[in-house]
Length: 287
Figure (cartoon, rainbow, N blue to C red):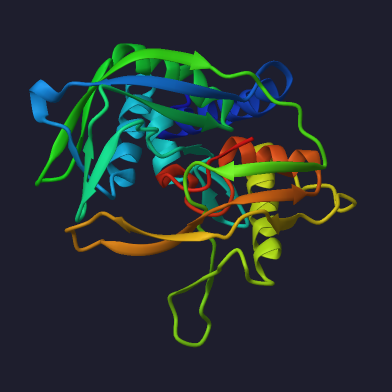
């Protein structure tokens, strides 16, 4: 009898599952966006968040994914979808929509009893697990060592899928982050929406995301993506992993803009986020 190691069997199974997934999702699944309504449990933990809560909120999303499918969540966290060996975790989310709030220093006091959040996904398989996990995880808490807020999910609604055109107007509901590698000094150079390089960087990022998700390159005949500002960009400094050795400060921008280009790439940005780090709370837009 020929003995086959369990590692080889697992590898073959994963190849079969992966092939089925890439073929199945394009034929039978739709991309979706959700509005999450939350109540603030002020009696449990208070109502004050750190201004930079995006990383903690991203961690909660991964936790929900983990409940839906441990293997998928682990793979998404470690690898995501890849184009040119660059990983993409193809989802994004908005800032909290808080009707009434007060900012004091680096703290955000939520005065409203109810707030909203938009979540948007390109990976269709993730959507099923995410929604399942959401209904199981009805309570959660985010914050840092100084202050935390407890939330309860009161409603999850799938939003209507828009019709995409080759020219559309969007407004950021979480800031867009774009950067390029500094070949001389190392590190990153932050790119402002007012830079001549901005449209080019947005276009390249959308192409990479499209290739990563669809497992094929974009059509070379598609028009180049162009960004035209309709409002003055407002910069926002975001601190990721505050208070840890991995802490980083990123400059991103909120603004309203007109985008022209291919419907496919514009849709990729709408679902998966414009610019970099969508899964950490950057690049979510609305019409």
